[in-house]
Amino acid sequence: MQGDGNILVLKKVCKEFPGVKALDSVDFTLRKGEVHALVGENGAGKSTLMKILSGAYVKDSGTIEFDGNVVDIQSPKASEKLGIAIIYQELNLINRISVAENVFLGRAPKKNGVIQWKKMYKDAKALFNSFDINLDVSKCAREFSIAQQQIIEIIKAVSINARVVIMDEPTSSLTDNETQILFRIIRSLKEKGISIIFITHRLDEIFEISDRLTVLRDGCYIGTKDVKDITKSELIKMMIGRELKQQFPQRNVQIGEECFRVEHISDGSKVKDVSFYVRKGEVLGFAGLVGAGRTETMRLIFGADKRTKGKVFIKNKEIQIKQPKQSVSEKIGFVTENRKEEGLFLKLPVRNNIVSVAIDKIKTLKILDFRKEREFCEKYVNDLIYILPLSTRQLYF
Image (cartoon, rainbow, N blue to C red; front, side, top):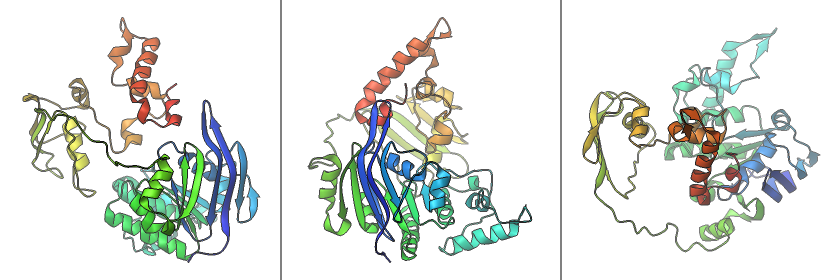
């Protein structure tokens, strides 16, 4: 039940990166026991603000009050000590250890310095059972789907007895059923007086689960409203700064002839006899619940997994793809579901990631030409610049 008073008050918070003012005098107030949606387009400053609260970033100026006291959050440990937990959109589980170990990471129950494994598994199981979630806590995290791992992250955050839980796009990989499980958890937390900051791009979810909402735009505070007092159209206007008369642009593309076809592709397990074709200028969507085989089908086509049968055609010519390198040579691109682990070299600069599949284009006499690399990256960033948030535009340098 929503309580009286504020648990969190941010005043005039600023954060600047080289060439980018990510937050410009942002205000934010969170009441005890409320679900407060933080809303805005990509690049609006939502994640930056939450990283300041979680201790990942340190604010440049402004004040943060927690439960009536001015605090200075300098690290994630300091944030956790206050009772602030954050669930990032990018999962932070350790895949090779059990669910229970992930939940109690750094906080395992001990007796005389020895971990009490039975108690840890029992406590983890009880925690999941308290939210009516049936899950084997002794299994490694990697054995569960992305959606199930998201649920594990949520339970992990709850387990530290947090007073404020920040959820950054928590439903991005959940089915409708799993989203309802999440909402049940949120309502349960709310009944216990825990406050939730809920970040999502799905407007329907805001109106279903949130009490209030705050809108950010281009790093600036736009306003705070009670959800019951605002319409979806009014919310969109606050987010983009103008009335949205057309949600999707009109498409004037002439659909052409067939350019890509898949026939009876299978992996002998989850993907069974899948066929489809795509025409020039066409956008073909694949729908299905988590576990339906969408990702697995695309991995088979790209050569990331081995198929047991099936054929792939480009312009009616069959092509043999047994590994991703062959797909790249045929000018087939693949943006993976799990980009953090499968799609990017996280320790390398953005420009290295951009050219990783086009090394031949930046060579001079078989030697890497870093001038060409920079020119190559600039070209592609400039081609896509209009859809990138301002903060992202600086990263590849």
